[in-house]
Image (cartoon, rainbow, N blue to C red; front, side, top):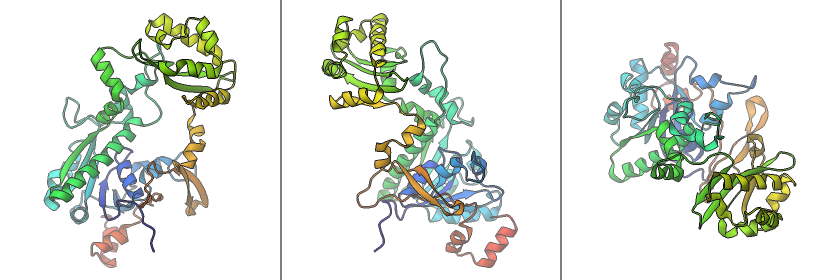
Length: 404
């Protein structure tokens, strides 16, 4: 018996997408069993194929964002290329594109054109700023969305300039929202027979990622306190999430409420010193900047007197949320990350290597995900075109004329 592969088996996807936000939704679908055809230009394909940082190895950027999909090369400026695209779309459930606004329409694969080919089609359009607004027609990137969306403040240091981060949080958030939006629209299409266009943007995704902190900011009409600690609640019901360094400079974090403050600090052996300093009640974090700073300074001093692993173990032993603050490399080797398959290993026969890659964030009891690798450019031309009814001679002719 064939092992079930993913809950999206039978779903057909065509994607004219590049970069990160435009490809990750369909990579996730491929992980879960969908048949995903990635359309690339014959002369080089997705530009991210060439963004390799390791000599002789595939681009980590392309590989991460395109694993498990099929690569078909099409010159969409040629009528024959567009005709092949329309044949693929006629059989598809989902189509995705993240071209600069207006480019898809100009090149014959805008929503209105493709809905004529397939009225049930779910059409995903990803842009930088969103479809409305003064900058809707501009191209967008992850850094732009981080800059406009406010996420830089989340990791800011008081008195220092805001900076965007190295991890593409806007791209990834947009991709995950596009993934969910596509499947929501697909459910509607299968129920009613009517497809629709789903708009997502890097900026919109970044704003969503800010969560309740943005709501609080808007209701208070002032920016939150940033830096070492996150203070929540009220004087009577305080909450604190804060980071500290141990004797070797290794960082850790804990998060708790005032109700368990004494228990947590007792487990660490800190409570007598904190009480003597006037910090026996966590509510002091709401008594103003000076009181909050005094508490944090005292905790800095106390945590610097021991080892991170011991502090984290004591807090966890008292049922307090605590963890070491990992670097990216440490996160990739974290025992919980590995045990749950959030990072996995995949064989790369061409390079005779077994390499660590992203695992899957989901666990399906009946239809587990399956991790693939990214395709070579045009690797699936013959198979995909053959399934559309093109013969070997026709495929050779299309290749000779640079249509594929």
